[in-house]
Amino acid sequence: MKKVDIITLGCSKNLVDSERLLRQFELLGYEIHHDPDKITGDIVIVNTCGFIGDAKEESINMILELTELRESGAIEKLFVMGCLSERYLHDLEGEIPSVDKFYGKFNWNELISDLGESYDVTAEHERVLTTPSHYAYLKISEGCDRQCSYCAIPIITGKHKSRPIEELVKEVEHLVAQGVSEFQIIAQELTYYGVDLYKKQRLADLIDILAAIPGVKRLRLHYAYPAHFPMDVLRAIREHDNVCNYLDIALQHISNNQLKLMRRHVTKQQTIDLIEAMRREVPGIHIRTTMLVGHPGETEEDFEELLDFVRDTRFDRLGAFAYSHEEGTYAAQHYEDNVSEEIKQNRLDRLMNLQQGIAAELSEAKVGKCFSVVIDRVEGDYYVGRTEFDSPEVDPEVLIKVDENRNLEIGHYYDVKIVSADVFELYGQCVDEE
Image (tube, rainbow, N blue to C red; front, side, top):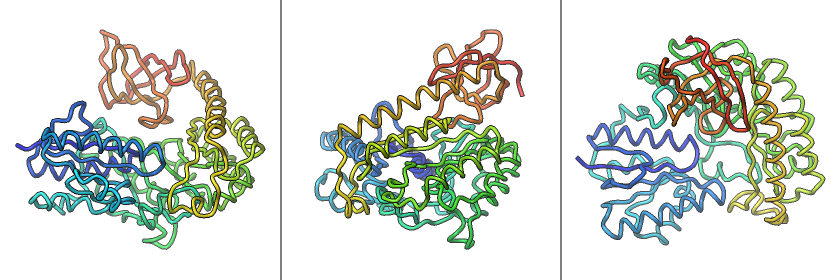
């Protein structure tokens, strides 16, 4: 039996592609491993990220590390796929000839035939889950029609392409039958869902349909866009008990100067009004956002305005990154990268320090309250789980001390009282089983 190792770098959307490829190899009888601690496969495949400078560097370093194994004979074949090779295919082919073949983001299925095997089109959307068996990522579209100044995603992924509702329903039903109860709904841009297929935004319709599927206990929405936000999504979140009161929406900035330079097609007041509507229409909603600092033209006044906005808005979750010039983007072609790396890092640190204090206060406010918590794993002396307000990998977790007199089951939901908190975790005590 031949062995294949697949290494996934970057976001959960890449992870879904890796899971689909793993399923193809499994059907062919290969022994499969994902992100192994030690490379043991006859074949190694790297699924790369090419979004920003740090991600590209990580991907290149991983490829170079594996080429040494390839050249020494420790592995038989090395393949590269994903966003980085989609964007820089010909450059990579010339600079790293030790890789057997590079594939882009959308033609990786050719890898199977290049190995002399047959790609099973009837299992095209089947996956080997690399997540705990009770949750999965559901990618509802590919690509993005937005043209933000700094973003290379449209260059890599192309135009927005929604998956048909019927296809998504079939995939969810298949995963539920395998034991999945929680779904992270993902896309490069959620809120555009349906425009290409149905000539209108249909994210709310999709939520209504998926929420009605028996066995779906949680749906969580990731990567929304603020401009032309479909307000009926808030109704869908509010009306369905199994749709988490949670929304991941990348705002990037609040200064009108920066929003215009970033080509976000939304204003400061529209952003404030949208956040207020979310909190009014969905009481208790937890909002995750992403901010970008150091974009060309960002003044100290712009940044202070951003700090004030974050301080006043008190986001439940916030991530941030510093601007980097990306080839082919509007900013790289039209703007000078005129904010120094030192200032970018300083602003990033100041923003995240502010958010850390806010997050600590919001976590502390949960002490004494009860939440439904799904158990993801056991780690050391603790069961580790999440509330509906916590997405895997990126949000705080709930730690429950292991009790010899009571075993909690992975993938099951329990009522948990929060007894203490810090910035990154909540500590809880199991009250009752749902």
